[in-house]
Image (cartoon, rainbow, N blue to C red; front, top):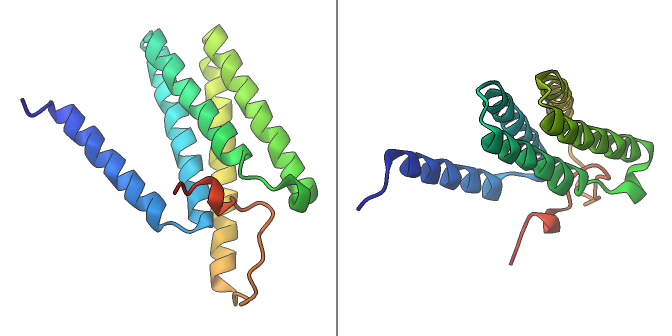
Length: 155
């Protein structure tokens, strides 16, 4: 009649995530994407080790979607130059590695991608700390590696 406790917890987590997205600046949105991809990879690793093939595939698909439709799609390759191109290639590499990990049941590959995501997140966090401690100019300029806000906001 009222649903299960698990459904309630999932709903609560979804509302919390949606609230975080609505309140986040573009820099924080990227951090949230890294966190989501890392969580999906960790979940896939657990599912792989326990032999849950369908759940493993869903978690890996979620990680690939976050990387391609979130992190990779937010790159402005025209303005980002070499950094954006390098990140694009790295995101493509991670997506391909995740696909191979799924096909071949390779937990080491999931660990590799999880490590890359963690390193990128740490670097992104360090950039955010530097940016927030420095004086922020009043001129609005689109950062080439920041997400385009319109890609996250739906009317």
